[in-house]
Length: 185
Image 1: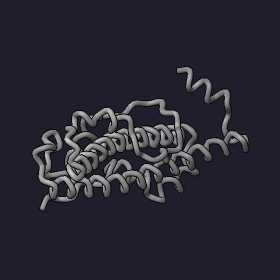
Image 2: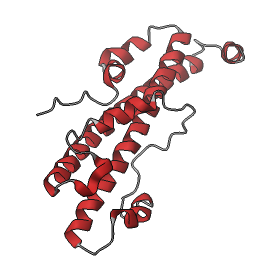
Image 3: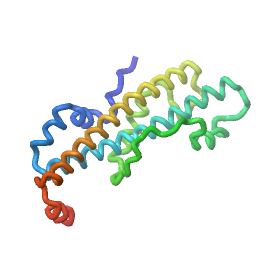
Image 4: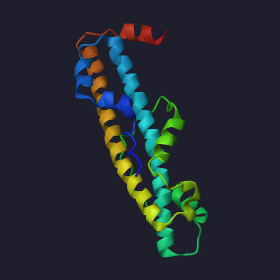
């Protein structure tokens, strides 16, 4: 049995999700809180990207299982337009955040997603047994659930940091002119 992959986002996300992380933000200088917010945003983008990769593979595996069960004669390649159009997928559950940064190290996230299905090379999906495909679908679905929970946690941290920044401006502890000067550098 292969070792279980580390949780999505690894140690960087673990640090953000530690309750002490957000608690300590109130005692940090303004510039540090802004930097922490940017770091949390980067991790959220990384998790979102990873989730899209994972969901794409899960959609393909599930559709291949369905294709085999229905035995309608079409190949998986013939079904790709349907899969890519997200036909049958429910509404998105994201928070509709505007992303201002790109994922860092996308190859790392692809490797992580690939590690979720050891012994099941999805690039040769038609050669896999039903048993291996079902195991891959279970593994991907379980990982997607955990990844989504971690992503929501990071979004809550982002919201907490934004609230702290807003509070400081509202309470007069921070100066908008100083922020604009910092951003203009």
